[in-house]
Length: 414
Ligand SMILES: Cc1cc2nc3c(=O)[nH]c(=O)nc-3n(C[C@H](O)[C@H](O)[C@H](O)COP(=O)(O)O)c2cc1C
Ligand code: SF4
Image (spheres, rainbow, N blue to C red):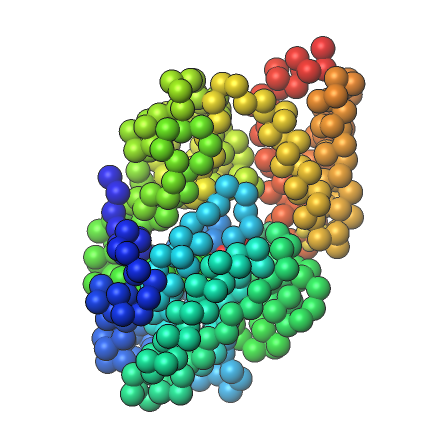
C-alpha cells in the first residue's frame, strides 16, 4: 500500500547530511535538469499532473506558467513551510529527514520558472527543523550546489530561510508574502483572473514543501512514472499524517486513491484499544468532519473527499473514537480560529468569537435551543464576502459539526 517517492530516504540514518544524501540519490536530477530547457521542465511537471500539497490541490505546472516568460523583473520561488494547520505534521518530516530533497526540488523548480532566489518561510516554532534546513543549505553552498554557478553550470541560485512568528494566517500565501516583505501578515485581496503571486511587486510562485519535494522524482523518472501512482485526476502520492486514536499513528506516503478504511483499519492497526470509531477529520482541521458511517467507500483523493462533502486538504487525518466529545473538539478548534483570525474582516473577527463563546456556554451546561440559531447565523455571516478563505472554511466546518453531531449538543443543552 505504501509507496516511497518522497519518503524514500526517511529511514536511512543521517540522510539529512549531504554525504549520505548524495550517496542515496540526492541531486541526481541536476544533470538531467540542466540538459533540459526551463520550459521542458515545466512541461514535465505539467504532464505529471502534480497538485499542490499545501491544502488547495492546485495544478503546479499551471501555476508556474503564470510567471511571464523572459520577465524583466526578478522572479522568486517561495516555499511555504508554515505548516500551521492543526493535525498536519508532514512538511517537518521532509525538513528533518531529507532537507536535501527539498533543496534539490527548489533548484529544479527555480530553474523552471527562472528564479535566482528562493525563500523558505518556516513557522517560527520549528526551531529544530529551521536549524536542520539551514545546515543543509550551508553544506550545499560549501559543495557548490547552491550559489553563483550550480555544480559548474551557468545558473545561479540563492536560498534564504525566513522564520515566521507563529501566526496561523501566515500560511495563507498572500499573508505569507506580506510577512516576508516585513509587514503585518494580513491576506491580500485576490485579483479576479489568474495571476502569479507578487513579492515586492515581482512575479512569484508560492508552493508547499511537499509539492517541491515531489519535483525531483518527476525530473528523474519522467512524468509517466509519477502518473503510474494515484488516480487520473489526483496523480502521484501524498504524505498522509494520521493522528488521534489509532494503534499506529504516523506519516504514511500513499498513492492518491487509497481506501480511507484500509488506512485506518489495516495500515494504522485500527482504533486504539479496540474502541469504536466516532468521527474523522480527513484533511487538517479546516475541512468538514465525517461521521464513522460516512467513511465507507471514501478514497484519499481530491475528488472522492469532495464528493463526500469534505476535502483532502493537507492530508492530516485526525481519527476520533467513541469517547471523544464532539462539542469539546469544536470548542477547541474555535478557540484556535478566533485567536488566529487576522481581524481584517468583521464577519471573521467577530463571528469566530461568537461561535467560541456560544460553545463555551453550551459546554458549561447553560445552552439553549436558541444557541443553534446563533451559531448557524454566525456561519452565514462568516460565509460572506471576506478577504481570504479562512472565514468560509471555518463556516463550513462549524455547520458540519452541528449538523452531523447535533444530538451531542442537544444532550449538553438538556
Ligand atoms: C488560512 C490558511 C492557512 C494556510 N496554511 C498553509 C500552510 O501552513 N502551508 C501551506 O503549504 N499552505 C497553506 N495554505 C495554502 C496556501 O495559501 C497556498 O495555497 C499553498 O502554499 C500553495 O502551495 P501548493 O500549491 O504547493 O499547495 C493555507 C491557506 C489558508 C487559507
Ligand atoms: S477572512 Fe479572516 S483571516 Fe481572512 S483576511 Fe478576513 S479576517 Fe483575516
